[in-house]
Length: 182
Image 1 (spheres, rainbow, N blue to C red):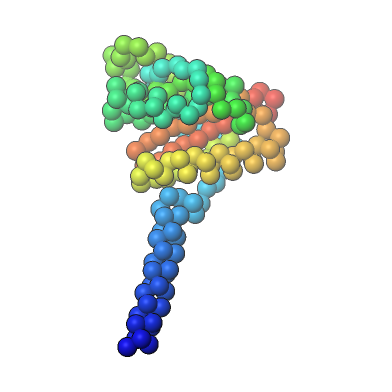
Image 2 (spheres, rainbow, N blue to C red; image 1 turned 180 degrees about the horizontal axis):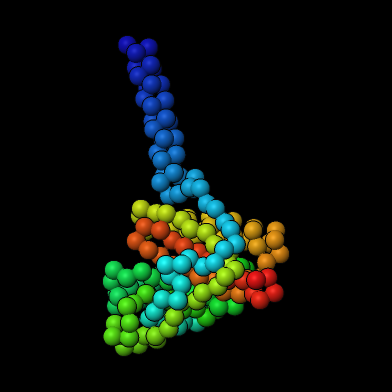
């Protein structure tokens, strides 16, 4: 009786250990830690370039950005959203930025928003990340910007502006380069 109880306890402990390892592996894959990310210098993403945008300007801590996205998307649900960070520094965590959405024209502009045109550049360090759940965006942003920062450092590129665009299932990131490196 004691031997069978010991065997059952050992088998149960082994099973739980294996299940825990599989759960951790699943979460790492699900969150996108193992997604292939490519980085290259190319023109900004064509479907977003020179499109009409509606945005709000903010100045503050970058920790507040998700809240600002929620505010903008509450006004424009089901729109492609973006963030533009001028004078971007990879080690700076506050400053001026624009959060907004792509719109069809001036008729769609709502009160409190500014009308503009999305930035276009022939030379930008670009990357993208496919996602199926909004929780994956944070991991994708971190992984893409780490690779983009490394690429910029290795190739001595100077970043002028950071642009992020969020479609329903894919995020596009671009570091617009200064005139010195374009």
